[in-house]
Length: 464
Image (cartoon, rainbow, N blue to C red; front, top):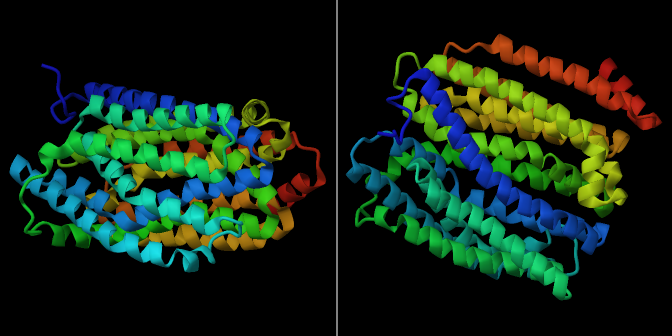
């Protein structure tokens, strides 16, 4: 009989299980992002450079607010779901967290709505900022339900329903946007309205997909330990989700909305790598949690680390090599300046995804507060790097600031994970692959630029 969990499988079968799940989730993500990549060139052609920078900002903002409201409960549910073997306690964990999140959103939405004008003053300046922010607020409860549902379907290995929810949401949204832009005069507000309507539909689909897990266990006896575990992750995930907002806000303040659009294009190009990393992360969480109690789980973990590092570094180099072509195809030649930041942004994505493997000791030790130090280091290095590098090197300074912040957080997360939950990691192999990729990739990529600013940046980095 085909196993629905990797626990009872041999080492080779476990790798096959992880590979198939990554391909499955990766296929869903790739198809979903493919539609996102279709809307991306449409946006860059339809909207002006300035308006596209504003649109990108308000497309990222809901993700940050969703993470802020969930505040680590998704990590807590994942950890405690695998803590119990019986379905009754699993159902309690799920039900209590779901109800708790709904109660939080009921309390927060009116506060945000009433004070939308005040909050808007602290966002980017635009003629319709308050209206755009209110559309983001309306989307939040449905985003919470979609997030909760897709996570639960992933943790319970319900692949078909997971694909229906995640892939269906992205495809439906993309199709409606493409149709609307093709036949109507569409504004930034209209794009956010489409996001809202599609979110409502798929939140209903998500809820009815997991409804059988929602029981009458609403005495919240499980929620206290989950809150203790989840709150540190809430701080962590909020800081992580805040980073893209900070990057965009500082880019806007230092370089203007036109350069913000170039930054957004650079991020979209690295989506090719994000497809692979997100697919892996989706499969990796349930995979390593289902195996950690076994005495030789480290053998599986190390093999995954080595193979994944090789694949990701190849993707980083390939994406950087073809960045000019990709920008031309997806965003037109007016965004070619974005090419300068593709390599550091791509490598940052790669390093972040590799650290997901080596930092698992933080989750396994249940000392979730440790990850606060990880994201705090990321946040501090990001801010100071942008402040130091951006005035001198412009867009390139933003790109390397993101890379440096990911290197710092990757080192610290791996160290803390190993300190509190030792695993016999083979760091040497993974590190040698990363260093080789950075060294040769850096020289090859920037060696091709002839502009004085790029050559000056090379000299500056070498002499720091």
